[in-house]
Length: 93
Image (cartoon, rainbow, N blue to C red; front, top):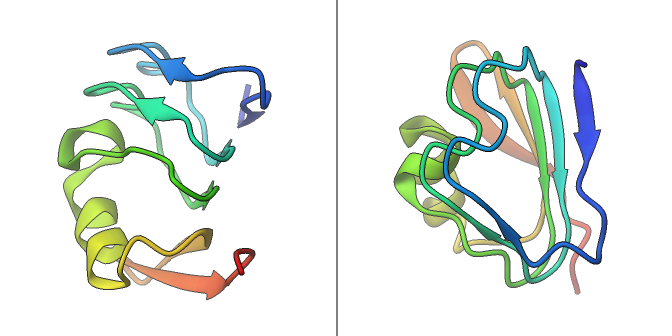
């Protein structure tokens, strides 16, 4: 499994839920809370985040979280390039 789109019916992703699954692409819909280390051990390259998602520093990785916070927790597609995360597309309003 290299990609996962979390269904909109999911409200919470538990701690370590997708640990070491070789995921490179993750889509988290609106309003989902992501538990600690939920995606640890995955070579994430793209994370698409919906509105009001609750993500902690330890949910997806410290470098992603810092980017997410620095961009005021904006929904959109975050892309890893050159060892840094950036927001490439804003899907929110």
